[in-house]
Amino acid sequence: MIYTVTFNPSLDYIVTVDDFKLGHTNRTTSELILPGGKGLNVSFVLRNLGIDNTAFYYAAGFVGDEITRRIEASGIRADGIPVGSGCSRINLKLRSMDGTEINGSGPELRPEEIAELFKRLDRLQDGDTLILAGSIPASVPDTIYRDIMERLAGRSVRIVVDATKDLLVNVLQYRPFLIKPNHHELSEIFGVRLTTRESVIPYARKLQERGAANVLVSMAGEGGVLAAENGEIYMSEAPKGKLVNGVGAGDSMVAGFLAGYMDPDVPEADRYGHAFKMGLAAGSASAFSDRLAAKEEIMRVFHTII
Image (cartoon, rainbow, N blue to C red; front, side, top):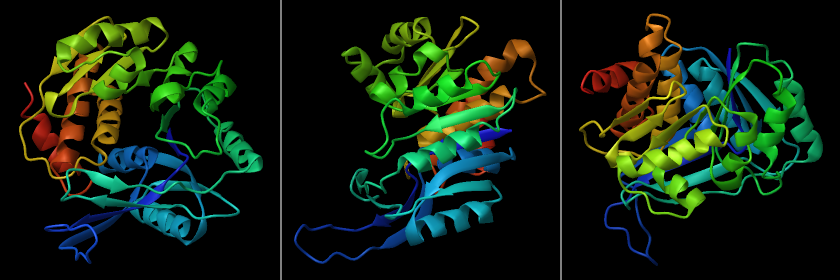
């Protein structure tokens, strides 16, 4: 079974406002409300690709109730942890203003609510996959992903981490199966400026030296790079298409990679190349769509990648 963890889920209110003016009343010309949060995005794309999974997440107030309703309606197993106070986030995303967004902070999590997640994680068995993705509320220590991996150490659980700064760096000692920084995050970790696929390679290798088995670097319009556990480097320019909505593209890349890696019909020798290609296709297909990409959209892009 695949499990995702989302500490700070949201309802994303995605709007278009033509000719936005500060200090004036502005009217939307399009609106879309979707459940959000990186772990949940991975869950939705996996489900779109026909892969069953369970979502662990925190749900607070009426927004948390709506997030749960939408997860259940999608066919994902919803395993929400109730939060005793506050309200889950509503994030405002202004599609017409170059990715401008206003994200909520989310509820404060109490120690007993964090302990409840650990109890649920104890159900994981050898052969399961766990995806830890996204930001955490201010009330949660930035060692939380490391703490989860420490608790699961010794089990054959494949762990994927998609996070920034210390949340990501702290887990490396526990040898995650996959990490997925983007090139800006990779630049920040090492204090350098990385703009080309070739420039990313030595720094992806450094993260492998520090413990990551596979390092998948998303680069938006520049495509992506995979430093794979088999010693190979895979890289490609981005597929051609019109950017519609960048929200969730990186999460889609993680889901596509896992779907490709676990495809039983792909020979072992081709596994990493196929996984990389599926990841690139899924990320791009979501970027070309109003919503997280459907399987048909992903496969259409997949067949355009050389």
